Length: 350
Image (cartoon, rainbow, N blue to C red; front, side):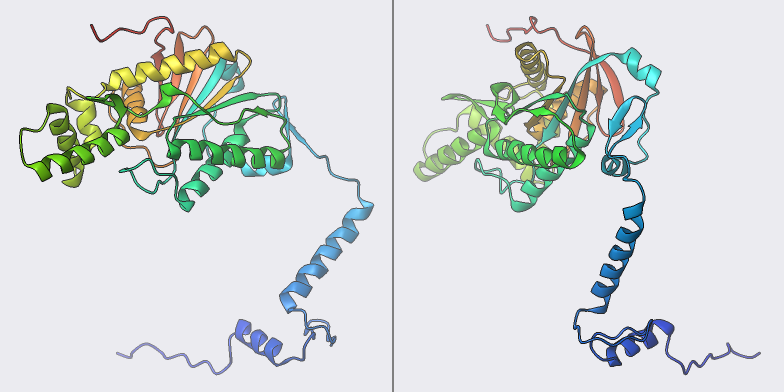
């Protein structure tokens, strides 16, 4: 039995031989046409300029292409058509007209933040994420749309909204869309879920700062028992230190000093109803907020916990005409839900 035949190659591969020819040629030479110039411009740049000049020469005599493309009654630029081309399954035109969507709400988590122990802002990567999200959102908007941009009052949510605004502005200029986009505005309904403290209801980040200060004082003095609200916050954060999911615990286990998940969902809907009443002409709302209430919102809509949203991940809510039902889409699942009425907000406290 003979072994595999050995192949000996004495000549250099074609790409290597061409590379050696270019390296050994004088500055500015071109082996294709045999010309030698004193120009020291790199070969790739000269080739690019030659192709650009050739294309320009052929298009000068031809009529100018149309600046817009028309499809299903909508007109948009070729750049937008190329950027939005994908594999997303879209409903037929007759189905979309029967759905009668009057307002589309995009609930977006903030970008990567510098930390959660303080009210820190975004990292450079988080700012880029939010800018990119705004650029992507602008693809969906049509000329004549009015977009209301709101956010929670924390630094990470506010900076996310500011970067979304900048990215969307850049995108609208690129796509050639005339859209009325409002500047970011902080509203109280989009805050993170709250924790009861002796100083009143605080969001979970602010409560954690108070928890750290109080725990340090009690450990230094070493007297008395810890108050119950402190014990519960300590339990919440120790779950995370142990590698578990504290938000899942908040969603599934009753916590006596934490705002219930259902109340966060009600609060979000109350804010959306207020925004739609204040701006009846706005067909779109973009809301930058936090992962905990978003996860509660998705759990309420789909009937199960779909998991922690990634930074700048989105929940889309399409409100139907009449305001009684809406479509909630998150992570490739769409569910039709009944919208809580604006004038029906239970008073949970006595």
